[in-house]
Amino acid sequence: MSLNEVWEAASATPFHPIVSKDSQFAIGFNLLFVAVIASGLFGLNRSFLSLFTLGVPAALATGFGAVLMICAVGVYV
Image (cartoon, rainbow, N blue to C red):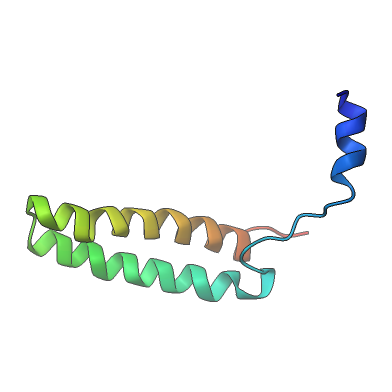
């Protein structure tokens, strides 16, 4: 399959994002807020169990929240 055929086939199925442009700010802000709370709780009790219950979810919420906030407020078209 050539690149041109792939391009033509992709035009039949447009991309629909999971998070719409209108709700990116609210979801990103809430994820960052939850990440601050979870990382604060993790800092109070740094055990092996809290690493998986608080640390990893806080890191994921920080990453996804930051990307959504950049997409919501940092891109000017």
